[in-house]
Length: 282
Ligand code: NAI
Image (cartoon, rainbow, N blue to C red; front, side, top):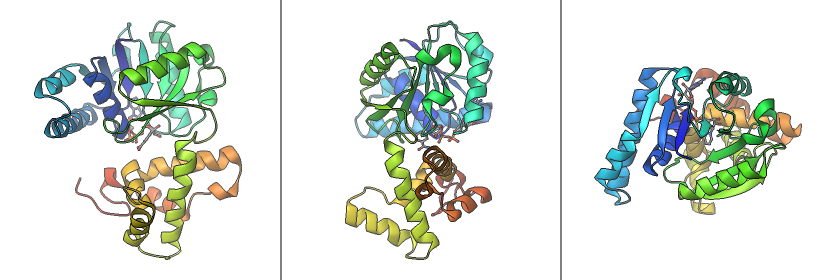
């Protein structure tokens, strides 16, 4: 594995590109517009600066990391020698499938296609002609800092694809955990209902956002409260995951809180839009 293409340069895509490029891979980073890509490179650059300050990397490593990333807006610019595509676009099944349909004819049949989806079924997303080489590679946010990669094996993912992606995660200095394909996998099956419950507590006026978060930080030793974490993840992403859990398990315990739905409809998506449960300088 040498040549990687990352689709989507938002919260997750820029972190994924950062980690691959830092570890010597050649990365093509795709998004819809130049301005979005310019912002992603700016974010990667300041995150690398933070790693220099903490003595995790050197100035030379920052330079080589940035040199290893090429930004692209046209899918047709994808290198024919791409070994691995990581898709990190919006959490929407149709959008992801439509991207795969465009991609498949452009590459040789041996490439592995990995999705960073938080919750959508890997088996349902898998393109029929490529299902043995399709896998979930679920990085955690913020990607450069978080060790875990949840690796999700779809019903038809081959053992060879699984072992390649497990080894690759180790090469990125991450800790892979392989799981089977059920809604929300492990991380979000447990995390999102907790966040949704915290939103219900706010909706029912049990306490303020600050106090709900304080209880979970001081009482449960969580580094961040659930509402601050929801803002950080993106409320649209949280809602999409709850909807996948709700429909995937057909169980009312996963119904998204009306307040979460209302905030997403209003465009208050958390940190990325400047307003969520808290306000941010964007
Ligand atoms: P985001 O909204 O920050 O970024 C998505 C990016 O994809 C945007 O820049 C958008 O312009 C771009 N995009 C959309 N369609 C595209 C296409 N056809 N080609 C190229 N670029 C396209 O979203 P975020 O938060 O980075 O999420 C991406 C994926 O990662 C989702 O599947 C999400 O569920 C998953 N994820 C998100 C986490 C989080 O904490 N935000 C954590 C782990 C996974």
